[in-house]
Length: 134
Image (cartoon, rainbow, N blue to C red; front, side, top):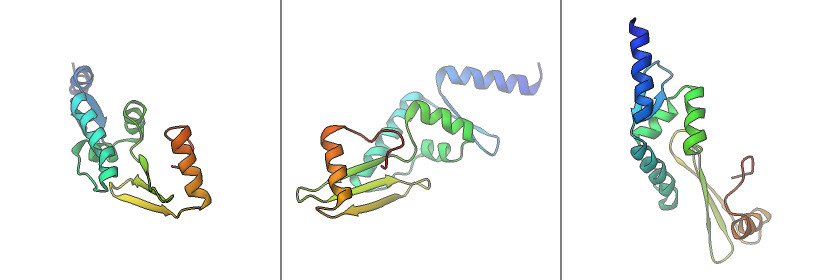
């Protein structure tokens, strides 16, 4: 059995025990599913705290091949999640995690069409559906 075959077999074995993220530089990173779940959750919660989070898992996904990233996002969710913060006065602040791990803000004043749309969406339909704005 050649080196590539042994490497492929080791990667296949790792899949059984972990989340495999293939990097664009050819390397492979493997994380326990519990760690991935925790990092995805904490990264999303960082949007509510408005504090970007450093994460080895998220950094690995940012450096992943397109196929590996698509597999990750299909299982764990998008890498650029967003949340809306609704103010009692009627304003809405949107926060989205960007590709580089920073948080982007959009503020919609009370009574604007976008604020009203987002407030109605939050009351009735839950999170945005795929393809919807934020």
